[in-house]
Image: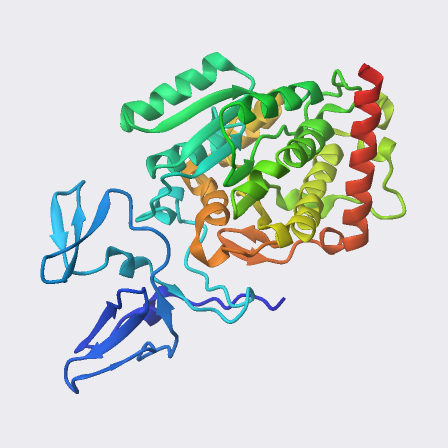
Length: 408
């Protein structure tokens, strides 16, 4: 796929005398009041647009007795004859390569969602009671989505939900227990989810740990590998029926630019390489880098396997050294993250690329890509290796099967 063109929104400015309008079926056209003519293409860029999706949250479309259409903004108590979706019209692209960059590193999550109505969407966000995950869940709930916060701590998550509801009393949020260091907990989470919901529209795999001390989980896996990759892999596989049932589902995998420093290859990938069982073979940063490469490989392979069934997956880097709970494992990490905090993204900005991949209209039906600063970019060569991705998938399945059989 070709690289994205670094265009800016200034191209969309209309010359004096021009007006942007929309037909009832959503096609955007341009009226020239001087020449009294109309055309389908933008007079400056030559591109075509259409309004996409539902009306913004709080808006309603009505028709007068004589057939005129108008729009009611129930939040601000205003009416207008202009379709409010015109402000968020999207270009009619020829292919998935033709995706225009509309946001950047300074954009925050709520700016991306401005004007969007996610009512009726069921969303799961792992690791969402703090940090980037919290801002992701908060932003989605502000725009009508029903968000399941998949975390370990009931107390911390209920506090997070309370904080959000102080701002938006009608926000729909629910806690379901999920401990990613336990495959049994993953299974129980899916059981609980299925008892309440029949479909899943958005799955955001956000939770992760950064270079903790060496430890083995109850499933006898190295903790970074299981929490960052294997349990998310298993969770996604178990939720496959619900994602397919949604008709169109997006999976978002939060990876990191650290994936570029992994040395996993087709030749050296093994169960022991992925999940060391003894301390002498363990280096925290190496385990983290490997897990982040696993994230991108898994995202690409999942998209190859499930996109024909309406499930699309993209991976992303949220930002460098973002001040979040992920640095909790060692005082030196906490100090370093605190020192660089004035020069890094806010949590709202760090959540923006997750929100971008999960919701923007231009990524509808598009997957298998990697994003940074709300812009598609090339991952490492290893991350694009289809054979390595398939090998990781098969190895992950084998490891899970062995672990579950050992519990019987």
